[in-house]
Length: 182
Ligand SMILES: Nc1ncnc2c1ncn2[C@@H]1O[C@H](COP(=O)(O)OP(=O)(O)OP(=O)(O)O)[C@@H](O)[C@H]1O
Ligand SMILES: Nc1nc2c(c(=O)[nH]1)N=C(CO)CN2
Image (cartoon, rainbow, N blue to C red):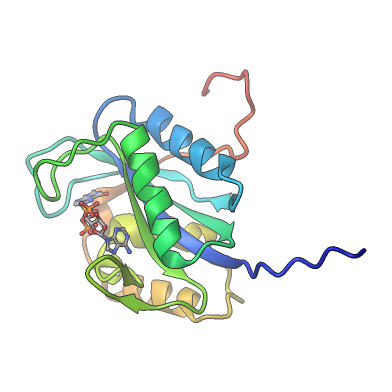
């Protein structure tokens, strides 16, 4: 009997940010937790960037990054996984746009758009955020079929505030277990 896989899978792009605690360790734990889910594979990660807080500025600097994942989940279920990873890493929601242990935002998913209370996809503010677009430009290939490459580079070309973004470290994914971060 030949097993037929019926599950379609899609590429999705996720932005991660952290500005409390051990920011780098938290971000790498988030990647590990996501990749451990049977229906999610982390394909690529951007470098890590240290970024000045935008919006609510009276808070510590962030570490931001972006990742590409392959998933068989519908966008709503992928979002649930992101919120679950935030909770498992101890995110406490108090001040909107305030400091957070970790934040995972679903930016873009190939062939999927949503406009509901629960989920807006593509993320409605991704085009105005250098702390999202700069990491994303590390991992979106030029031949990406959905137009994301053009969107990212066109948005970056008209955006100021890129000076608040400093490259901090490359992301070693998959993490070489047993080696402490250099
Ligand atoms: N594309 C999306 N990615 C992540 N969360 C989303 C998305 N669309 C809607 N949401 C909803 O937004 C809610 C608030 O998210 P959160 O408190 O992390 O906002 P934020 O990340 O601080 O601000 P911003 O949304 O401007 O990045 C989440 O509980 C989630 O249900
Ligand atoms: N530099 C930076 N600023 C922010 C960030 C973030 O991730 N990085 N996230 C916010 C709410 O999502 C608000 N402001």
